[in-house]
Each structure stands twice: as C-alpha cells, then as structure tokens.
Image 1: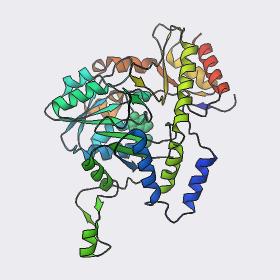
Image 2: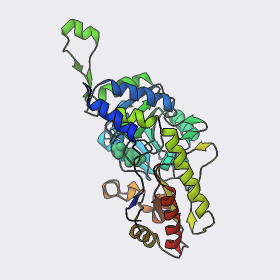
Image 3: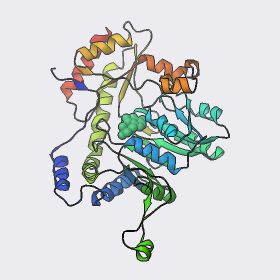
Image 4: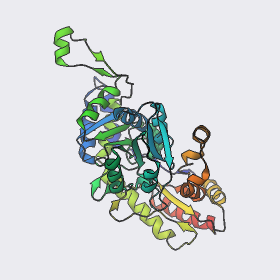
Length: 379
Ligand SMILES: Cc1ncc(COP(=O)(O)O)c(C=O)c1O
C-alpha cells in the first residue's frame, strides 16, 4: 500500500459535488435557503423538534452551554475521556468543568461518579456518546431530574446511533453534532444543536448570529433595517455551501452507517480470538453508528502500545489515539490540580488504546490489510 490509510475520511461523491456547485452559482451562498433545508432534514433524522446549524461542533457546544445559562462560577460535569472541546466550552462561559471518570465497557461518563461530584454550583452534565456508543441515558435522565440539571449530549461521534430505539439527538435537553470530515457525515467544518425546547431553539438562532433579532413589528415601527441586540452573540453561522453538502450527505447516512458497522464487525470477527486485545462492543439496547474503532492492547501483551502504533504507522496505517484524557492536559491538570488517581479507568484506557481506520469509503482490501498488519504487529 503506497498511500496512508487514515483513521477517518469523508465520503464525497459526484452528487455531493453537484449540489455544492449549484449553490456556488446561486444568489446566496450564506444566510440563504439551504440552511433551513439542512436543519429540517437533520431535525427529522434525529427525531427532534428543532435543529440549529453552526460553523463547527465546538461552536454548537459553546452555544448550547450559553443557551442553558452556564455562566461565571457554574460547575458542569464532563467525562475526562473526550475531545478537549467538550470541556473547553464550559471554560468559554466562565464556568468550571468538573471532570469525572468513565465506565470501562462503554467508555462513557460514569453516572455514579457524576452523582458524587454534584454540588450546589452544578448546573449541567455534558455526556459524550464516545466512539458512537450511547451514554447511559436512563441513569443520566434520572439524575438530571433529581438534581434539576440540564443534560447536554455531545454527540459529535454519534449521529445515527440509538439508545433503546430512541435516536441520539432526541434524548438530552440539548444535543450537539460535529460534521468534521472524519465524522459519519460532513459539511467540511460544521456542527448543529438539536432540541425539543422552543426557548433554547430561539436563543440558539440568535446566538449564532451576534445576538441579533428582527421581527415584523420592529420593522414596521422603526424601518426595515431595524434590529435589536439584547444578549452577546457570535458569528457561528454555517454557509449555504456547507448546508447543501449536509443535505446531500444526510441522504446517504444509512449507507454510511451500514458500511461502518460492517467494518466494525469484520474487525471484531478477525480479532475476537486474540486475548491481548479488548474490542469495542455494543451494549444491550444500543445501536452504534461507530465513528471510531478503538482497540485496546492489554498490559499482558508481548508488545507495547507504542511499538504496535509505530509498526502500523510505518506500514502506512494512520492509526490515532482518541484521546489523551482531558485531566492529563496541562491547561486542566495544572489549573484544577487534577491527579491520575481520580481517573483510573480513563488512565488505563489511555495506556492501551489506538483507533484503527474506519470510514465508509474504506475498501475490503484496505480492511484486510489493516487486519493482517495488526496481527503481524502484536505477534
Ligand atoms: C467529542 C467531540 N466533541 C466536540 C468536537 C468538536 O467538533 P468540531 O471539530 O466540529 O469543532 C469533536 C471533534 O472532533 C469531538 O470529537
């Protein structure tokens, strides 16, 4: 194999290219009609009443935190195993991300530990459907209602996943998505928030456009140019070019997920008898639209994770590590004086893990090559 096989890659075909060209030739390439089309299609797909498209998954998380009122001094509970944006969005609002450990099987937030970390200052929980595996939403919902907390689902990995037959995007108070090219569908850069709550929806619409609002009454009274701003907002808008790509990608999502699941099954079959490895499994009641395939090399393995990782990279396989737990990053470790001992499961996972290539466009030849090379690497 001459070209590197990346751990994730977009699947763009001629129909995607044609819709983008069409928008580029249209009047409006931003703030036009494609945004509504994408938001409606997304809301329908995830079974939510409302969707608000944003410029990135990070912008979606920040906007969701503002919409539910996170501000100076508030605490928000976040799993330490996630991409840094899941915690940074709380810092953006002046809040304190309170990191907690994960469950060893689903790699999602440990709900019993969440309860131990709740204080009078706790305002929300951000749970992550890690790798596409849903968090323990029943337990989280019970806890959120007991302590009157807002539930945010960082579903950047999990568009198309289901928890007890409910699509991710319709369960938490606010759910955020990312459409970065490594994700199941892409808009280049892009994100969205979905919700069933009209108040959040209206806040989010304003927030992503500088806090500006307009309506017919104001226009009649003061002139057609008139708008008002009451709260600080941002430019977190998605373009129509991206939104049109999003609609086209969404129309193919079932195929993408099918292919991702087929590769996950193929890897699991191939590695199932290798005792040095821990493989990603789907818990009862969950349907995973796998975003990444995290394989763990147990401590008893002959080779170290570093040796296997380097071997695969040398062979042209773009393995990656998802992620360095947030409590290990200096910004968090130093600022909040965090210690490894508080996060034993995430620490152990981090020592063992690497993500193998998984994307819809992967060929059988590439999948077989990854399987063979990993087997060679651990021998
Ligand atoms: C769990 C998680 N949250 C948030 C983000 C941020 O998304 P974006 O890169 O679209 O800003 C990512 C992106 O990789 C992610 O994996």
